Image (cartoon, rainbow, N blue to C red; front, side, top):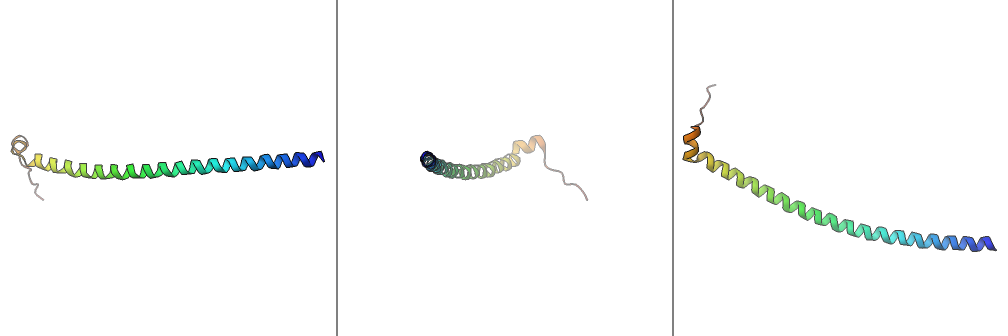
Amino acid sequence: MESILKSEIFFFISSISVVLITVIFVIVGFYLVKIMRNFSHISERLKETVDSTASSLEEVGNDIKESTLFKFFFGKKKKSKK
């Protein structure tokens, strides 16, 4: 009789621990999904910013190369003969 009581206590404690572990995994999974969505949003905004900055820097570089002061100091590009 004593062994049956011990086994019932063991199964009760095991069931409670499985339920608690499952709840903890669900909560951690929820926050993990939330963090990944936030990371995705940050990544998209960063990509847009880098793209716009790259095009702006390219325009500034072209403006500098076409300026008269740049041409005065560095001259025009010489074409190589082939």
